[in-house]
Image 1: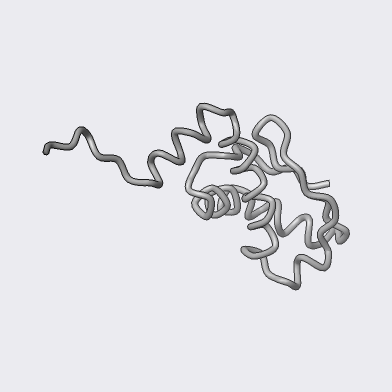
Image 2: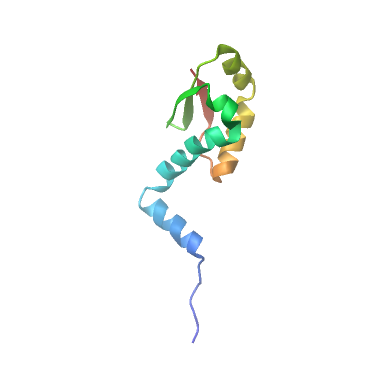
Length: 96
């Protein structure tokens, strides 16, 4: 008995999510969840609303000094968040 092309469960699940249009919203949710994990509890205290629109992550930061520091680290944060999710979900971060 010969089997056809065998696929891993992960590959089949990814294909299903992509076909059903669930992959992008799921990855966006995961990026938002990773924000506090990657930046830590100290910065989480100063973080307000976090959402994604048109591949841009919008983050409300309650401290102007912290906002300026995070602006300087913006590119590195984008890279770390996308790597944590395993997909190119965001292309820019906008601090408010």
